[in-house]
Image 1 (cartoon, rainbow over the protein chains, first blue to last red):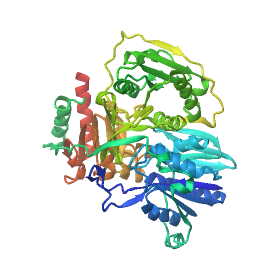
Image 2 (cartoon, rainbow over the protein chains, first blue to last red; image 1 turned 60 degrees about the vertical axis):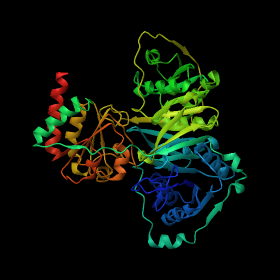
Image 3 (cartoon, rainbow over the protein chains, first blue to last red; image 1 turned 45 degrees about the vertical axis):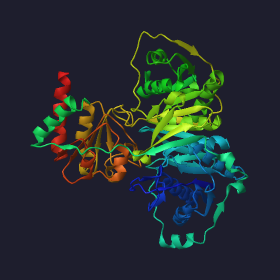
Image 4 (cartoon, each protein chain N blue to C red; image 1 turned 30 degrees about the vertical axis):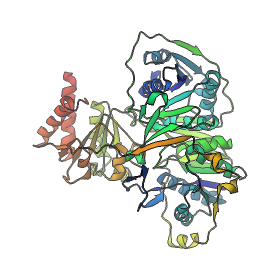
Length: 256
Length: 325
């Protein structure tokens, strides 16, 4: 099987957000593989183990993402591709889908996997956009994937309910939490990853100009939510605390 | 400049979802005096089409087709694209729901357009609307605009106020036939897991449990409290990882982001990854044994105590108060 995984480098979920000069600062920030993309990587490796073939992990963005790509290679991916957008002023989800579509134009693939959402921008647009651009079907937020020959049987999370879906390859799927338990890279895996191929591409290599992928949206401002006032700790025994809380929620906060 | 704005509404079992009314209110802000057209897509659509008018739609289009019984990206893209070609709207609004977020992204690619997802508020800005949306799961916000062309947005449930219902508004409902063909993904079956019927991201009240709930059985009193309040049950990553509940209940930076009117955190320590998913709730209550728990830093009201003692008492007193009302 020819398997591709889309990966994004994001802030560690434990990071606090600091805004500097109107942008989110990445000074001293610990980066990770977007957690939903980790599920996609794990599933891709499992598919390879079951059906044979090759897993290529692809990212679009900063060249610093080499570190996260190496982690994906250490987990078991075979090849990595980094499409650098360092020279592009501003990209949005439209841009990223254009770039990925240009990359996949001359590739043959059976399945493309990605996370259903990134934990930074959180739009969930890339998977469905790319599938549309490539003219292949997609299923988002999957929690189970079985492939038999050309046929995929998928369980998909739809707001808590599970849909059982059938589709044929080639196909794009996006991972939801619960799909699997991502493995940690093993020590031999980490050693091997250093020697695995990692290709860095510029937009030029994809026959794209910066103008071709300039964002269609513009960020006017970035700001932090207002700081919450310290709350009130209720006194007394459990019974009077519960009674007082119900009273406050009704007459003071007016939420019931 | 007035904009004709198309709103994709969603109904479930003949009932419109509240987020659809919120989407109409959002559309009014974007439309700048232009017409707001409601759209319903499905296998069986009845009287609910008129209700979109009560909440502000100027007219309604219905696409009814047996092949649209379940959501599939192919079927819904075909139906909505057909209506877009007929109506040529200047703006499109959908709810940021399971259907809306998936459909909007694919459709934006088909239309070669921008899409601003998961909008929580809109500034009209003299006809050049600005869209505010959370980033880093609500740890920060960004304000965005579409440079030019179609304005396409999805709005997060529970954030934009719906307009007041006006049943005297009797609007035109037009049926449009669309041939739906070549579905490449087939929904074989839907396994219902949600017991209460209240969706977590749309619930006005969320009762959430953490490691302090100790077991799957321990969630029982939380479900009882949620039921009395007409709310949904959520969980922290700790509770999901420990196997106390399904991952579909997880709230946090990995998991769902919720903004209910009332969030009751039971036995949740308040790791930053959890706070990202709930700290923009209107009112937060924390119940935890540990007075030093981080959750108390974001709570409006805190009770230091045993959840197994406090939660059943809350259920009892809420029941009393709600019966009086």
